[in-house]
Length: 183
Image (cartoon, rainbow, N blue to C red; front, side, top):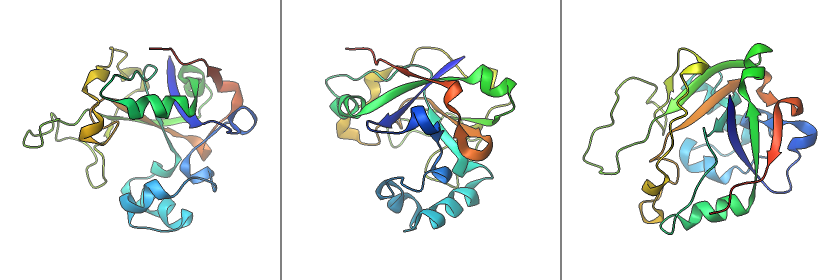
């Protein structure tokens, strides 16, 4: 199974592998200040781990390459400024590096609507539901048209996954630099 991850251009993934937050001391902390209320890398790692064991070693992945629309130009900017990597999840699992997989289901666009599930970890700023097996990852197409810059929260309305990696690094042999599809 192939999953996709994006890293800002100029990264060292083809030398060091894909680093989780816990393993990336150079991570941009600005995004996490508001989410965690913490100010240092160490404190944010501790906050992640207080959510659930392994959270700081999680890497966000998608079941297909991101697609943008005229209503989600921030996704175009995100893609243009990132390298897209595919990850061989079967090999990670076979080699014992894949500890857990969580799905973040799409949240309702209507703020008055209840989420479709109440099962999962909700003591953090995103709903994460632990899958029984990595083969439960859905490869159904994602409806990217629901992404709308005016609504904010760029990935909240689509399904994505968080893979928990032993030691927090996906080694180079499990990844491939891909060419993102054009619109």
